[in-house]
Image 1 (cartoon, one colour):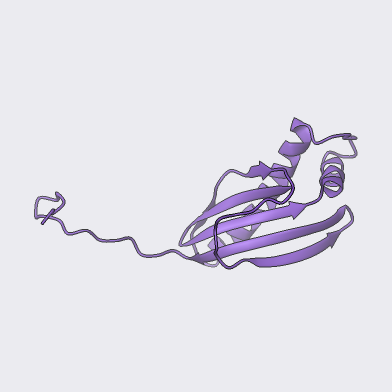
Image 2 (cartoon, one colour):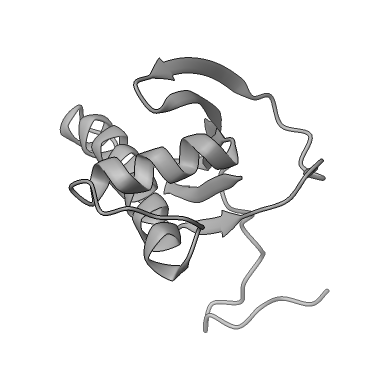
Length: 129
């Protein structure tokens, strides 16, 4: 299971939080003040997405407080076995042992490329030749 948030601004990339089913259930219970979850229903999934928002939001705030400009996209929750990404960017993967179980934080970030400047006429229209 994974919660994925995109990063945009002066850098671009993504933060992915990865955990097993049992860990996800334990996190949902802990974040909902002990409310039991037997399965990853809509409330449990929303809770995991909010965890991604909280952690990524703190990362973005620290970056922005240091003079940067980052924004996060809404989280996407993905469930499945053997999920793969077609993105070949370098990923920094950190394993964190929590009271709820193992959580992996995957960070892929790079400085944003400068936009392509297309030739324009004096009136502002694009020059085609």
